[in-house]
Image (tube, rainbow, N blue to C red):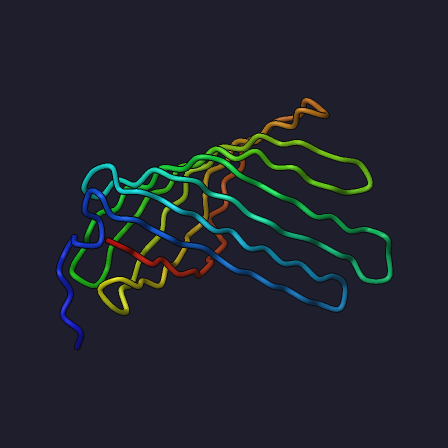
Length: 161
């Protein structure tokens, strides 16, 4: 067993580098996304930083495809459950540009919970458990709220400092 120093990962002045990677291929389509975040701990358990992402979607046997780029500020609060497991709540506002047959610009704000399982004192496997999201398209004027509770994603978080 690797001993961990509780809360040392979330100390003011430290850094956080995290992200998710997804790839899905079926007979009908292929999709991918890479979503990194970088944060600086401004207080114990509270990180401010930037989130971003790139992704794409391609339907087989059709001309339907899209790509997207996103960037924006994020805030993440970490709560230690025990020395190996923590909970986090991440809020972010993203500017998202999507290239399809027509270009779309979307502003999006979201809140998402995660569980972190520390493999070492600096590296955690994250389990992302859905989100609440509000989005608004500058191009079409459409907006909406969505709640994603059925999606489970995994990523990594690396704590520096």
